[in-house]
Amino acid sequence: MSNSIEKIKCLIIGSGPAGYTAAIYAARADMKPIMYTGMQMGGQLTTTTEVDNFPGYPNGTDGTMMMEDLKKQAERFGTDVRFGLVTKVELSKELGGIHKITVDESKLLEVQTIIISTGATAKYLGIESEQRLIGGGVSACATCDGFFYKGQDVVVVGAGDTAAEEATYLSNICSKVTMLVRKDFMRASKAMQHRVSKTKNIEVLYNTEIEEVLGENVVEGVRIINNKTNETSIIPVTGVFIAIGHTPNTDLFKGVLDMDETGYLITKGKTTKTNLPGVFAAGDVQDKDYRQAVTAAGTGCMAALDAERYLGSLE
Image (tube, rainbow, N blue to C red; front, side, top):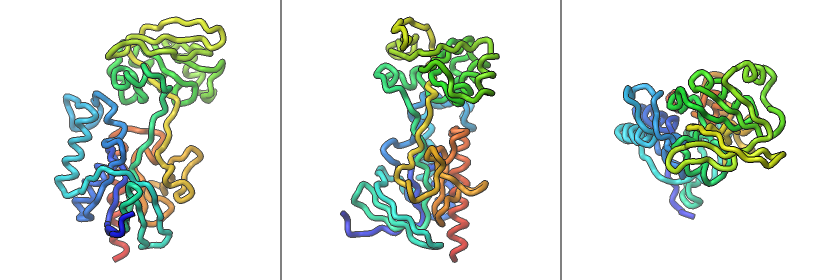
């Protein structure tokens, strides 16, 4: 454990669109932000090959390049971007209190304001062929990537409201959407189930799981198995959308910050304020409804402004 303690005005934890946007605004406000990127520099977006729906890229870009652009912009205004992982937090409950942070289990920080932008992690099935083809036709976000499958056949894996929403969204773009439901019923609300059943180009296969995603570099189909009869078959598709949920990256803050039943940080009203003074949350770590790069960036801006106002109120 290092004996030297670094004092920081604004610490940003996480390096996705929310984190980098917060850094740009905080740096321009002379808050001298320091960012610790986490183990996945750039966040979930670096697993997306093509980004067509972020403003300012008329010809599109890819996720990794976009995050590098945001990083360069944040650094241009003076953000200190560091590769590292926050491993422990001791958050003050006092107005104007100092938050104690440990990075990589060794470096100690004393921080006036914290912007948490650690994001959420999409849940996947965990099979080798699925993992290999993430970005090559396997996606966890229909609203992000559905456009690229216009007029094509795709499958959606999942049985809850998210899966039903993604299937109905894709049905407006794709020729056919096949939903693969592991059990013999859907967990989605009755309203969402009715919407699915009324959509002509959605087919629901119950008791069905993916055995393998087919294709070398891009998805060419899926081999499915009926878990009651053990019969297998192949569905030719170009896109596989996994819609079995996300896990917010909030373990570090459990028992300290207010969360909902699924672990998303709760912010106050239209702000990014958490239940502790000087601690703010932005992006997917507090947003389970939209989960878009542009909305994450918006809340990153809000968090920096909230942090700036908080510091101003202490003077």
